[in-house]
Amino acid sequence: MKKRHKLAMLGSAALLALTLAACSNGSDDATAKTPKLPQTYSASAKASPKANDGTLKIGEVSASPFTGISDPILASTSTDADVFSPGGQNNLFATDNNYKIVDGGLANLKLDKKANTATVTLRNNAKWSNGSPVTAKDVEYAYEVLANPDTKSQQYNDDLENIKGMKAYHEGKADTISGITYPDGENGKKVVIHFDRVTPAMQYAGNTFMWGSVEPYEHLKDVKIADLVSSDKVRKDPIFTGAYKLDKVVDGESTSWSPNKYYWGKKAKIKHINIQIVSPSNVTAALKAKKYDVMQGQEASADYPKISKLSDYTVVGKPALAYYYFGFNLGHLDTKTGKQVTDKNKKMSNKNLRQAMMYAIDQDEVAKKFGNGVEWRANTLLPPVFKNLYDKNAKGFPADTDKANKLLDDAGYKKKGKWRVQPNGKPLVINYAAPTGSDSRNAANKYYVQQWRKLGLNVKFTSGKLMEGNSYISAIQQPNAKNVDVWRGGWTLSSEPTPTGLYGQSSPFNMGHFVSKENTKLLNNMNNDKAWNEKYRAKQFKDWQVYMNKETAYAPSTFQLDWQPVNKRVKGYSVKPADADNSFSNLELTQENTK
Image 1 (cartoon, helix red, strand yellow):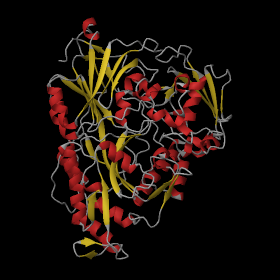
Image 2 (image 1 turned 120 degrees about the vertical axis):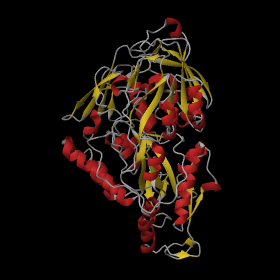
Image 3 (image 1 turned 45 degrees about the horizontal axis):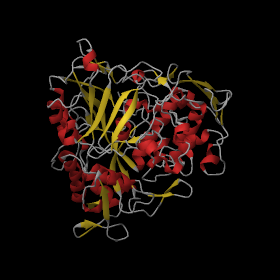
Image 4 (image 1 turned 180 degrees about the vertical axis):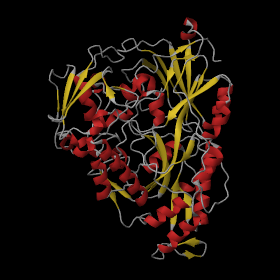
């Protein structure tokens, strides 16, 4: 039931339980067999009207409370996206199973390569969950919120400046975005967006050149854009375009929903949905106790064998639009220009140091012992779900402690007593930021630090210990995070994988502040005029993956399956992209209580 997320940080969830001896060389063939999971599940019994009058109970796995930001433009974590997903995330477009935009959603899209325009036409019966119509202004207002100089959104990126007038608006030099027009007025159903050029990515939902959701202008117009993220209209009383309307939010804990009678699509059958945060350490026990019909979020791969054997649940899943990575702090964000700046004198600026830290940890061995096939070592910063663009031949960073030591020696990080010092002879203390989670996740982070210290690197946890999840996110997002040198994070990607929104110079998500001419060139090449040729475009993506591994400003950690256990009283469950709009209204229940 996952929606087509825009870019979001993976919640601080369980990863792996481990206590590993140091391995000098990792094997390339260290992954358990990946299970073949169905993408749909439907109970064989007939739906029960009495059961449908009850509540579908969904558990959201997270070690921390959700922040409560319902707006897809302002939210930056996958946990927030999940707990508000019955509202539909206000998605504009329907897609096929390859995420290519097709007619039939809240709006249709027509691209004109000659005129360099995109025409968005809303369906006539498009309404918000309060009954007000969805209008052309709601399409345009999303761009105002996204690009306003005072916005708290992290979704803005360089690619959006392909829209005429967007750069001037973003820099505060214009009050409106000149390239967005309304042929039938603000209350009409049509919007024309004028671009410098139409790009190949625009054919797919979640691309970085267009925004894929609407924003309720009439509902929000009295709130200053700078205040939206903290307003009750976003956190307490938001409205949506999806199959369900929000009834109640218990801060950080749960959301409750009932059918949206104004939904343009298939009407919802189950009268109530409740989504509740579940600690990673309680997932298996909660399922055994039949507390939830569905468990979503970032389940621990270590839990997969136990959950997959539960007789009253079926595991549904698909390759994840997600990956984990290690990030290195290489600079700062210029808050006046909104541009990332790489500082040559930053502590982690030496490429040998970054690569040595990656070769020092044995992610293959971790995956072999605890990944259970649903998580495995990543070799690039693009997950294999994007088959034509993913570089399967990239090596990534298999464990090799001899190579790690040589890299440090060659770069002049000599030992002075117990610890290595910087090439200039000054002491080197590296701060590693990591969120607290389940016992297994905490053990994983301690293992990383252990391996780095064995190299002679004086690595310490930021603040001296593992951090509360939301505090961790706040720490790594600082414009100049002086107490964070390296961290392990994760991304839920949008369904079109151009990585400008994560690693572009204007991207707030580029928290390692990595900027280079080559990176910008490769990012731009993915959607230049030549990129309409699929072979050319695939080569640019693969060249970028090789380049990013070489630079190691960000380093791949793990890939995974996106999997969810579904109780056998549920009918109509699907994670197929083409089913996204009606993923909740397709659901029914066969009996009153969870089986």
